[in-house]
Image 1 (cartoon, chains in turn purple, green):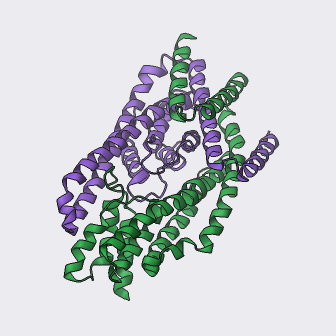
Image 2 (cartoon, helix red, strand yellow; image 1 turned 180 degrees about the vertical axis):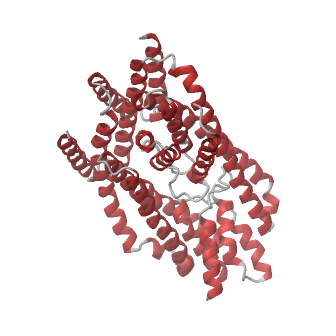
Image 3 (spheres, one colour; image 1 turned 135 degrees about the horizontal axis):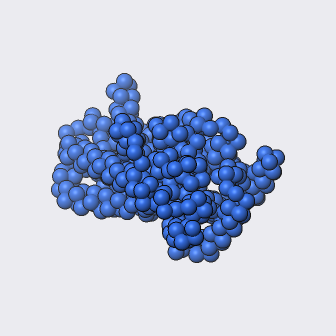
Length: 230
Length: 245
């Protein structure tokens, strides 16, 4: 992947914003893969690739219910890295989809790990500042909070940078070695798993109550629409 | 009045970053303290410091509804409630605000709009669908944050009245079925959208993979998740792809 420096900077900034949005600020859902991927595609002048990988990672995201302190992968910066990889893959299209998904999955795993590390670091810092917090000093409180925000921004920038580095490495390491059939296998694995994770995650939300009938009705409608589109 | 509105506006802005210092010791507590602080500034000298300290104690709930606790606790401080009463109020709100927010937002509003957006993209709406998702989602998001903060400030220690609002009950009853229908509708369209460029054998392989992975995720949901399965399958596909030249 050889991109002009201004595009790389734009992707870095976008990936960082997306990473911060997930938990810290302002949770307006630019961290959703649909949005992260589409905007990354727009930055690269390749919106169709952004939409495609956005849908793949959005379906994978259905597998996650971010309740309490649950640990989960981070698919926002991962989608940005995935789109960068797919855009640069020779031939793009299906070939890019598989390679992009692979880079995105690894970046998503890393993102999830860094979120956990950050929370542990924050815990130590907050624990060390207990006396200041109990004194009711508002400046200490705000300083602690802003520190957390800045650490999350650094974390998001780091994850995006690693993701873009993987995207840069994917072309020389994998594109040359993989045949069209091999790249297609990667794409099949990603798409199949994403669809399964989407269905499984939704069924977990829907449960066995009356909403299951609504899910079945929607599924039927979707199948009819798919047949009609043929 | 203008002072209260200004303080509420500052608290609302700070609530957008309520999870900025999320940690396993106080969870959202520090962020809640930061958001509550503007509403405590007109307390007397002896009250302000302890109230700020209480505001930063352990708290965990859905981030969009945390404003309810911020507003209610700040109002209770102004109404002269005892420290014990305020601590109990905060503790009592964690569970209900968490479960209500999860049901309304994470399991309702968000997947509903996400499903509709995926369907719209698959039907050819392109980036317009994504822009629509962002706008519509955030109308609901900001409205919910504002409602939570103002309801908390209005009701104070009687905030449970707000939690039984008919509007919330109706929204919960509508969002569940709507979400289920929307995502169900989106899944086949997403499959078509993603697999159309594949050759016939690739489409068949994707369907078989989806079926097998779905069964394994349902069967071993305690051990497996989408990311792990996707990474393992990608590794296998990569090795096979490198060998099968």
